[in-house]
Image 1 (cartoon, rainbow, N blue to C red):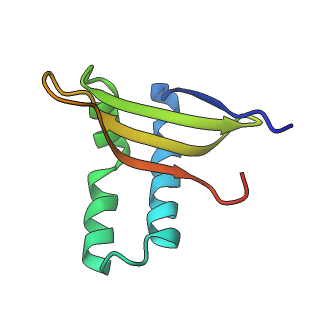
Image 2 (cartoon, rainbow, N blue to C red):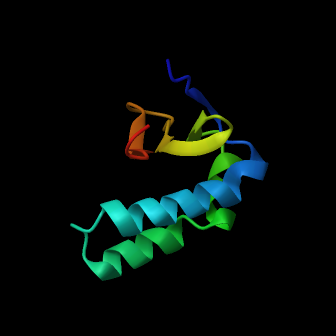
Length: 94
């Protein structure tokens, strides 16, 4: 049985999360126009993920298997209204 753990993204994991996000967008979101993919990748740099991770209204989760980040969930919990999931991804085969 494969064990996957899901936790809040530790600050130290944000560079790896940014790399996985970039790889996922480039490989699996080809239905977005190239300029949209480029903008989305830029908007999820390590620095911007850090800002989100430090904001208590944002959700930055990572999924790990054998210590490696294999997925993520990025979202928000606004003061009013329902929580929102902006990005959810797990590497194929996991």
